[in-house]
Amino acid sequence: MADGATAQAVIASARAGEPDRYLAALLAPPAVRDGLLALAAFSAELGRIGQLVTREPMMGDIRLQWWRDAVASPDPATRTGNPVADALREATKRHALPTPRLLGMIDAHASDLQAEPFATEAALDRYLADGEAAQFNLAARIASGPAGADLEAAGADAGRAYGLVRLLLGLPQALSQGRLPLPRARLERAGIDDIPGEPDPVKIAAWMTSSSAEVRANLEAARQHVAKLPRVARVAFLPLALVEPYLRALERPGRNPLRDLAEIAPLQRVWRIASAHWLGRM
Image (tube, rainbow, N blue to C red; front, side, top):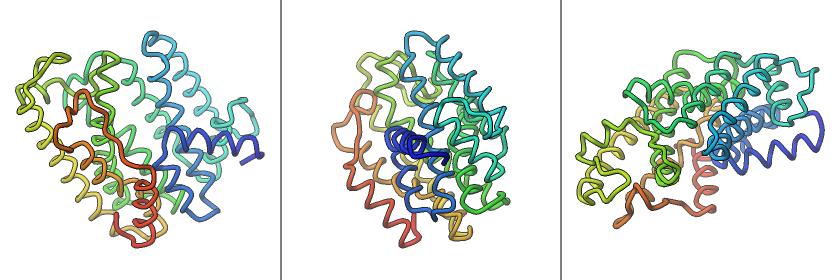
């Protein structure tokens, strides 16, 4: 990164908004660490927009457009004044990151500004592919070079597993802001149509069981693909090590997934990421 102030700002943003990917970046070789931190901070900044402008979506659109302009002009010699954007520009040039993928991440976060849920399962699939899956692929590109078929497949399944569990973790906060970040049909199929009222807890539990099974199926598929990748690329997929702990937190008895936040201890996050790195198992 260009200077100490920029580096500290990028680290602070990544650590606050993408703690899993921040920890993964710290375990990467020094030559690629800055690029991974810049990508994580970029994702964190995009995620913050939806949280800051819940009452003024137009302001969110303006901020996302600023990021589109910054990403579309990746020359690191031209400073934006935003340390995360400048660090991302450097990483884009150094690691030949494809601009369309970065722009896709921005477009995916436009959904965070909408009160309406995803209209279809296909819309949710696009959101996960353009957001989480793209970020896994970009991180792997930083860590190991251009992507191949195995890496693309790993990114797709990883993005779905990690992305879905993150949506489930964020569901209580999203609902409190008047948003439903899932297709409504998913809940209606489970007989849950009284939102934000008092849905039947038995139906909620059954829906949570079904959702967890879907995440675990994608997690297992991702693990199989990641196992085929060169070890140098696997650092990009270390956040997968937290999917199972997140699911266990979501599945705690008596917890209402529509209202109650689910968390894991900070030390557990560190231990799981470090163990996955040293043992090579997600």
